[in-house]
Amino acid sequence: MPAIHLTAENFDSVISSGQLVFVDFWATWCRPCMMMGPVIDELADEYDGRAIIAKINVDDAGVGDICTRFGITNIPNMKLFKNGVEVGNVVGAVPKATVKGVIDRNL
Image (cartoon, rainbow, N blue to C red):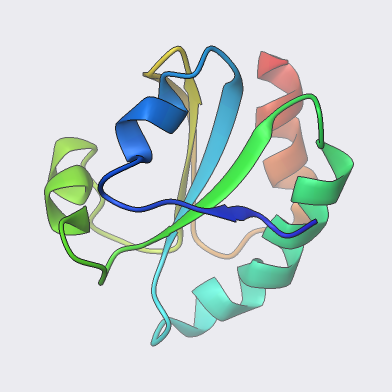
C-alpha cells in the first residue's frame, strides 16, 4: 500500500486524526525526494494500521502556506505529527532505519 497523498484541503484533518501521522514534504524535481519515495512507500506497508504514512507535494496549490507554517525550507523534509502537534522531524535523504527510529519512538 503506497503512502497516502495529502492536499492543502485535507492536511489538517489528517494530521489531527488522533493517529500518529508521518508526512513527507517532497517535490517531483527533487532528486533526494525521489530517492526517499520508495522508502516512504515501504514504511506505509510496514506501519499499516499503526500509523498513517503520507506525502504532500510542496508544489501543489495551497501547500506553500503549510510549508511556511511548519518551517519547511529544505526537502525532503519529513515530519511526524500526533494529534496535530509535530513530535518528530527528519530532513534529507536518510537511511530507512533513521526514519523508522523516529516513528518507533512515538508509537
